[in-house]
Length: 29
Image 1 (tube, rainbow, N blue to C red):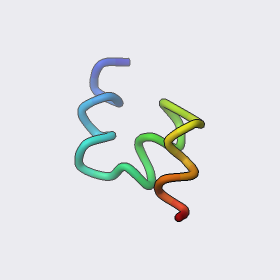
Image 2 (tube, rainbow, N blue to C red):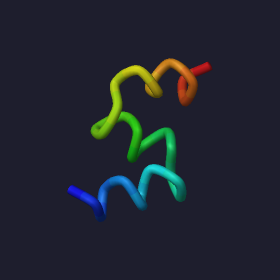
Image 3 (cartoon, helix red, strand yellow):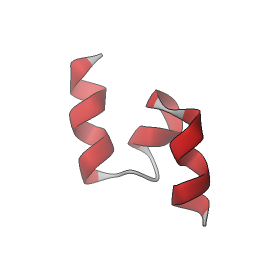
Image 4 (cartoon, rainbow, N blue to C red):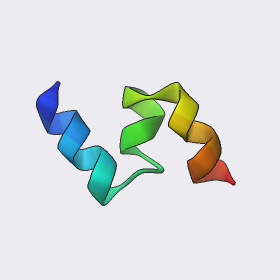
């Protein structure tokens, strides 16, 4: 799970999409 969190920083539009659905809006917007 921690690996995904690190990926969130590299690809917020992909990592956050699976890790935090709330960030999904930031990636789409």
